[in-house]
Picture 1 (cartoon, rainbow, N blue to C red):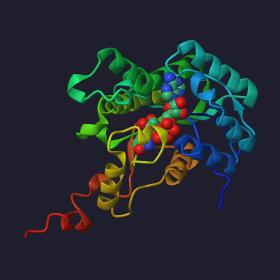
Picture 2 (cartoon, rainbow, N blue to C red):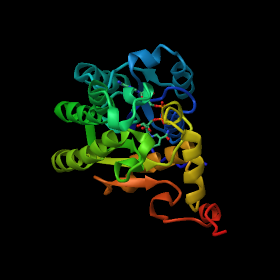
Picture 3 (cartoon, rainbow, N blue to C red):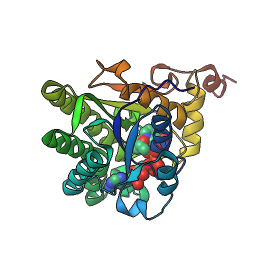
Length: 271
Ligand code: NAI
């Protein structure tokens, strides 16, 4: 069922790599809710070509941009405004990557050049996207920027490695930039802290399947899917949430506020 929640709105959606990507589902839902938008990803990811299918399905133009590169981000906003015919109403930051995770380096023996890259791609890129937009005055009043996060920003998850530090930084940027952009232009900035989700980025985490099952058995509602996450993002892009800003919003089936579940206790029954 659709509600035309984004009718007349223009957006930029980053991070759709393949049909499992959270951003892919957000694009499909945003299209169904009446939005027009551009799709963006790093040039290297675009070479894989999958995103073309999504562009055709949603009638969107693809604009390559490495989210760590300010010039490319400037071009992304300018071209998006040209293609869509005006200022932007919503932006999805759905970007994450850790070379340390890719190379299987443990948290207590990180490669620091890689760590700087993890932070740049996964967190500072949000600051850059916001800073470029603010400088260009590219986002309309009450516009909404949503970034995706994970609860390892607040708690220790050994396998999440330096992405935990990146997510903590990301959420801090949400608050700090949310203040400045809110004051100056009433633009909203929030993060959605999502359940483990089977995507390319998610499955790259060591022991992901066990971890996925653990979270599923803790959460009263079970893990939230990528599609559920997309629905939540749509509400945050819509005017129905126009006073929500600077928040990290858990979208995790109740995981973050559950201490323990009966299912998990079963495994610890006293003999
Ligand atoms: P995904 O692998 O489909 O998406 C990650 C995207 O980041 C890819 O499209 C990739 O090309 C893009 N990217 C990497 N480097 C880039 C760069 N330099 N410039 C522009 N784009 C770049 O995986 P998923 O899971 O959809 O990830 C989206 C977001 O959701 C990430 O921030 C991730 O950390 C977050 N998240 C994922 C969870 C999961 O379990 N899958 C749980 C909680 C949050």
